[in-house]
Each structure stands twice: as structure tokens, then as C-alpha cells.
Image (cartoon, rainbow, N blue to C red; front, side, top):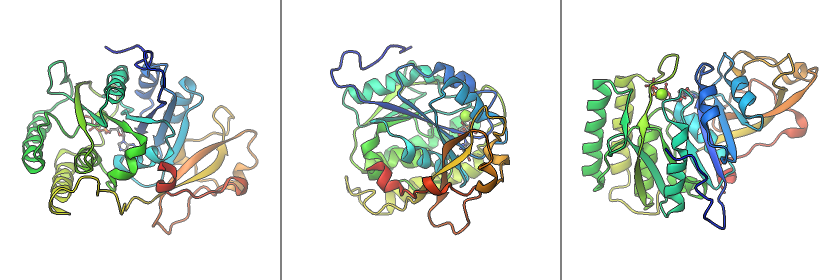
Length: 319
Ligand SMILES: Nc1nc2c(ncn2[C@@H]2O[C@H](COP(=O)(O)OP(=O)(O)OP(=O)(O)O)[C@@H](O)[C@H]2O)c(=O)[nH]1
Ligand SMILES: [Mg+2]
């Protein structure tokens, strides 16, 4: 497995951000963080309002973690917020439950540095596999692969696998809008439609290390199918480079001061309903990015600190 710095032989070293969506994964995310290669420049944790110590576990291993508190629900909304917050040249997606192996990150980055524009893991290539497939997921996934290959004229071996990497400069071209697990299908279809060169690398999916899945095979399967059909037929014939021109992606990231990790007054994002006035009494503060849907009229539950208020559109951040 790749454990060395894939940039060692390159004069100009692109920076790498790892984006980790997490919802109550304190039992698993520590292992994930400990196995993120040391040469990764940035870890962005998108915490879906966990009520456990997920954030603390990550901060313990990576004190420099960029924390995003995700007010909208779903893995897709989490990833979109994470992509907006990331600052690296390269973005790699990693699950917090340990099912995507952080020790494989180098293989993905290597493929990008070698010329690919979008890299996706495949559990069906030689060297890849899964310890986590149920028969339903396996059959369903094979069906999606068959259909997508015919609809898009491609020859993928796998889909619906959340281990992907790409250059951050291309995020805007993908025009991502998915909120749920269908983001994985949307990412790949959008990359194809945008004319990016998509490369598969072998990957071995592990079982989640603890806790329960947030995925519901039937419900999420329908959403995936809807996304696939929408991606293929929305604009009729494929027009490379046109996708994402009018992105509906509107997630705001609001820098917000909250009690710092280790301050004794820290609370998990999902159980902290205090307002800024109460936070101001905290002995130590830190900044998190609160992600909300731009169209949402609901107030951000934790009021942003006055000095730090800045509302940043995804498009600005991705620029
Ligand atoms: N921030 C955030 N993360 C989420 C949300 N839903 C799922 N996740 C995370 O997304 C990753 C993948 O979700 P899982 O529930 O493991 O789904 P899965 O990998 O298809 O299912 P398993 O087979 O159980 O691993 C995990 O790290 C979850 O914690 C959400 O609404 N918000
Ligand atoms: Mg998982």
C-alpha cells in the first residue's frame, strides 16, 4: 500500500486536503486520522451535528483540523461544504467510519499528479475489493455501473463508492447540488460531462469500524437512480465543459467563534444550542465554519462572532 510522499519526485508539490464527512463516528474516526498520511496538508472535518466526541477525537490527532459544522443534512451537503472549506490544490474524500482506507490516499494523489483530472476508487479492479458489500448493494451497484456505462458511453468498473479525488480548481465545473448519498453518482457523472479525464484506481473497501450505517439501500438507491437519469438527460447530449456554468450550489460558510476543544466548555455541535453571548464567557474560543444552505431563512443556531462575520459563497471559496 502507498505510504510514501507521492510528490517526492516532483519539483512543484501540490497541497492536499482531505475532506471527512462525519456523523457520530467517535469510535472510528481516530483510526482514520491516525492513518492519514503525514504529508497531507489539511484535514477538513465536516461534522453533521454529531452529539458524540467525533470532533474532539479528530482534534486530538490533528490539532490543525478545519472544522465545519454542517446544519443541512446528508453526506452530499457535508461534502459540498467540505469542498468549499478546503484550501489544498487536491481534494481527497475520506469516510470517517474507516470504510475508505486512508492509507490509499497516496494512490489517488499519484494518479492526479500523473495527469488524471478526476480519480475514483474501484472495488472491482484487480487489487480492489470490499469487506462491506451486502448482496443487495453489490447487485444494485453492478446495475448502476451497467446503466451508467451505456448512458454515458464509458467503461467504469464501479460507482456509488465515496473514495474520489480531484483538483480543487475543478469543483465549480462539477456543479454539485446533491444533498444525500447520491453525491457519489453526481460527482462521477458531472466529471464525465465536464470532459474531465476520469481514472479508476483499485481500492479495498473496509467494514465500518463501529456504529451503524446512515445509508438506506432502497431509499438512497432511488435517489442514485434519479441522479443518474437527471445527469444524462437534463441537458440532452453531453456537452463537455458546460456543466456547472450555472451552479445551484449555494452553501454559506459562516466563521463562528465557539468554546475551544479542551476548554472544558466545549460541547458537540449537535448538542450546543448556546448563542454567542453565552460563548463569549468561555475561557478559550476557536473558529469553526458553520455551513448553512444559502436559501435557508432559518437563523444560524449559533450566532456568529461580530468580528469574524463573513458570509462566503461556495463559488467564491472554490475560486
Ligand atoms: N457530516 C455528515 N456526515 C455524514 C452524514 N451522513 C453520513 N455521513 C458520513 O458519511 C460517511 C459515509 O456514511 P455511511 O453511513 O458510512 O454510509 P456507507 O459508507 O454507505 O455505509 P456503511 O456500509 O455502513 O459504511 C461516514 O463517515 C458518515 O459518518 C451527514 O448527514 N453529515
Ligand atoms: Mg461507510
